[in-house]
Image (cartoon, rainbow, N blue to C red; front, side, top):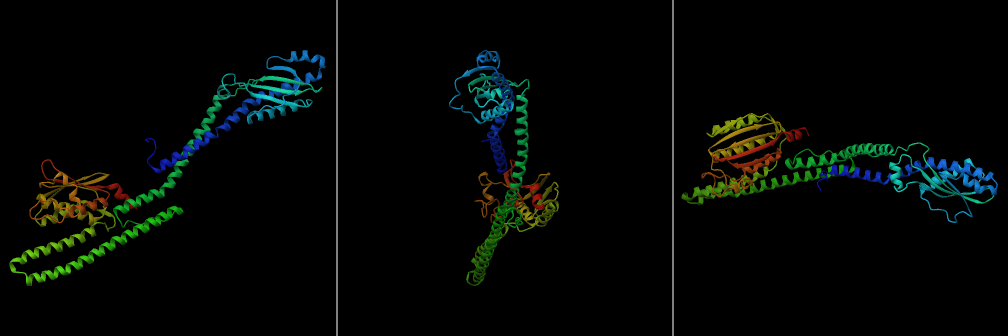
Length: 466
């Protein structure tokens, strides 16, 4: 569903506001009752007063004169007739009609206390063919119809049918409905939406903080622990998160210690094998044995280095990118490598040593496989891009992603003299991710490989402030 928000705060806000509107719609019957009672109040008072005065006149007349008097009093809005007895079963009324009937009896007896008995048979809004709801919403002068049965002084019964209006007073239905919708739905809805937004924002803040901490933990296992202040549920989640972080740090440290111990134990037999090579192996084969032992020792060292570099163990600080690149250019220049640097960059919040190792690996690969390296700096307020290009043969398209996997080496090294151990780009990618960035490789149309290191300034700056 496209209209359904993706964020939890948006969904909670819609649920709260939707629930409020549904509840308000259900309680709209209160407005109907009030409107119905208001529409019947004036006709009921007028009808009760008119009938009370009429019965006072009828009671004063003799029984012989009553038929003619009843005909004379009957007319527009009032029909009188004698009946033998009142209805045996009282009429069924809803609560609005029952309230109007009680008002009718109250006004009648205040006006005429001689009539001993009075029975309201029917009372309703005169809706014609429109329906009572439509009449209340659109009719400015709704009228009421009443059927009343009353006993006279001689205990005979009289039935009166009355029709009364609003006595010229407009109900202003549209204005009343507009005022109701404005105050009940629009203004109240706006206030509830605002309060729901503030409440959801306040409730979601600890969750957002937990999500941010989880993301930072993915980039730097040594990020500061979560603050455990707040509601009980938030404190429990924060304590569990901090405990998980401590366990991860302990597991990584234990793994590093284990590999360091293994590396140390493996180097001991390698050393003994070197000594035996010098003693027991013929001179013409010693060089080959030494080469194999050197490779084993270097592979052990590379494995340990990979474990150490798989995580960032530094504090964030402002890194002078220009000085870092200049230092790398001079270092490679001392060994006869040609490295060119173009562009300037503002200081970047980051991990200085890890960032230097990352760029050193990238430039070293460019020099080793492409004879020389060209470094181009593209800086903006949001991102910092450092692009390193070489003039080598490039990498086949199906292996561009694989070369960043640990210990992955191309089937044929891009240089016949050395192919490394396949760790340089993997370490560089790890450092890029620790800076909320990414490392991308592509072959250039004119030949050579382009390595683009893209780092996010804003997110690194936020992490520094945190």
